[in-house]
Length: 143
Image 1: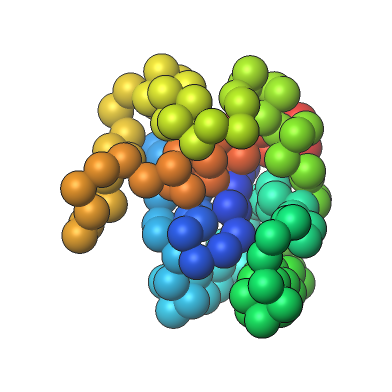
Image 2: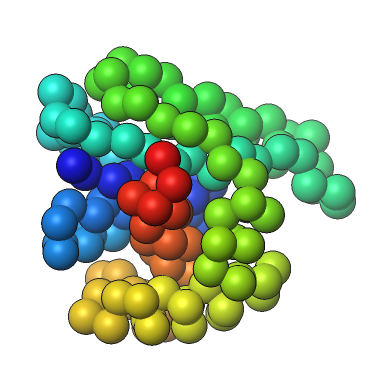
């Protein structure tokens, strides 16, 4: 069984857990399309973070964010990958993660010590990769 976690947004990521192997991918539509198309026909399930409007965000930025969220749902539907929308509070409670993104990185490093959370072109660990990986683990435990 393959477990997928997706942290939506331009600073988000997609993670895959397959047996002992863990992979993360920073947000890129072409990459997501390739990765998800490879999952078609596989026994897989996805935990997609259920996001909503955030106070202080502008109308245009919120529109673009929700447009990307809808695109992700469309890709999962098109490639026939079952998914569940999970609120951040729910999956974060599973791992005792707070709103501070650094706690996601620390928990992820503890649970996946061999995974590099510094993507190519970055100098520091990517919280989107950490959160996507934790959501994939949530899918493995709960979905």
